[in-house]
Length: 188
Image (cartoon, rainbow, N blue to C red; front, side):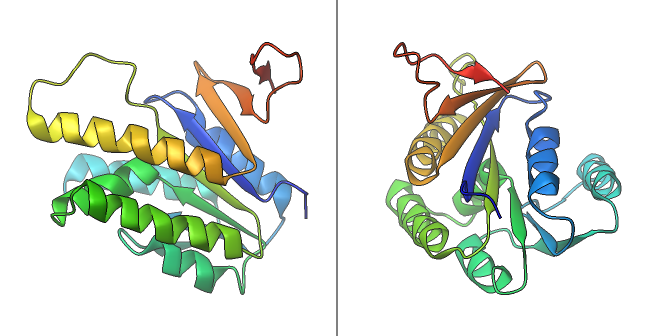
């Protein structure tokens, strides 16, 4: 096991973040790898995406589907896993919003996630979308989602050992800083 036990991988859509997160987890363990899926596939296109992700992972990954109580799943899975990959936090936020959670409710769920990460006895790699680079959404639910994603990403980034941002398929480490004194990350 590595000294780095909790990693957040951020990026936009099709940025390579999930692929990098899976490779990172694969490098941490040869077996007993658990993929914690937060997606609730509700249409054919999303079911196709889920199937593609499953095929990409291969048979050495066990999948646990949990859209809401990911903290409990991390606690349980750490007893049997050598690494857990959580994909993804932004879908988890969507699920919480659709359950009627407001900012306080979502932040309470993040508290539970942080506690689970602190208790984790195996490495945990988390994936999340960086959605704040785009235009301001036109409707209040989309703005609420964007704002919650930004707040959750900030909280989780503080709680983990390492943060990677993937842009155009290039992963760049932003935490801990590269040590150049200028706050610039380094390509990995």
